[in-house]
Image (cartoon, rainbow, N blue to C red; front, side, top):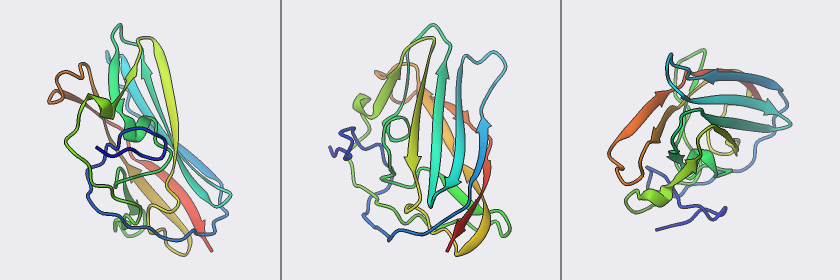
Amino acid sequence: MLKSPSGSFINAVGLFAVAIGAMACDTTVTNSAAAPKAGNMVNQSLQVESRDGKVLVHYTIDNQSPNVVHVPVSIAEDDQLFASLFVITDSATGKPLEYTGPMVKRGPITADDFLAVKPKTKHGNTIDITNSYAFRQGTHSYRLAYEGQYLDDVRNLEKVTPAALAPVQFSHTVK
């Protein structure tokens, strides 16, 4: 099994390695989306921030349940992507952006691919996706989508609870 530079196990679906150069950007925009459900005590949210040449995705899980829940390390701990975790589309055209970041081959998903979030706690993480997607030259509006999930029990990896988050709109400028 492979580990990311942060030391966490890779929770990636993709199987190849690709990299691109840095892009210069200068727009500051922050938008967010959450996945609240009536009666649901586990909520996840995303916020996208584009500033100082970076596109940062801020992820938060709020576990107000009486039980530990488990979320993928790829969203909860890694600071960069190792597979196409998000679907990003150009808001004007609807066309998806190509994922250009690293894609790491990994073995089957195990309990080590999940982070335990204790009851009545929040956990947050920030992922820099600047060099992971082919953002277009100039100023453009984008839509980021993520199909969240968590496990109630890591001994039962087949029983995933989906937590679809509303898509997040953001603007980004590449010079």
